[in-house]
Image (tube, rainbow, N blue to C red; front, side):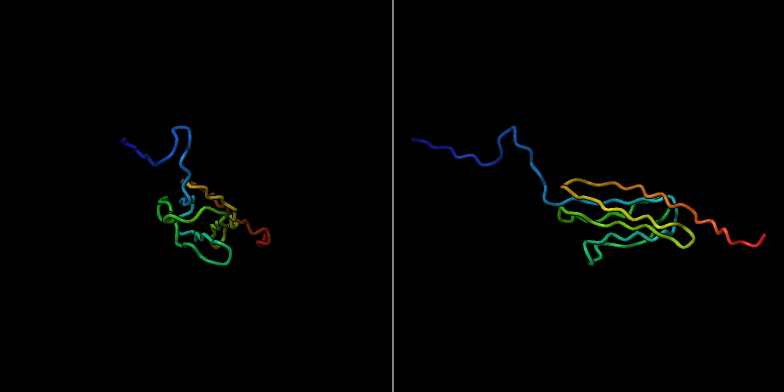
Length: 102
C-alpha cells in the first residue's frame, strides 16, 4: 500500500501574508517622513527627489504615517498593512502667512 501525503493549500485558498510594506512619496524634497507603530518609530527619513521611503517587511496592522516640513501643513494618516505593499503619495500644502505686513 502506498500513501502520498501532500501539504499546502487548496487551489481555492489564497495565501495571506502576515507582513507587508509601506512606501511613501511626497511632492516636497527634504520633507521628513516618519512611520510609527504606536509610540515606536518603524522608520524615518527625508524625501529625496521623488524617491519613496520604504519600510522593510513589517507585521500586519495599523501604522501612522506623518510627512512634514517647515513652512508646510503636516500630513498625517493611518495606514493599514495587510500583507501587501501600501503606497502613499502625500502632497504637502504650503502654509501662507496671512500676518505679513501690507
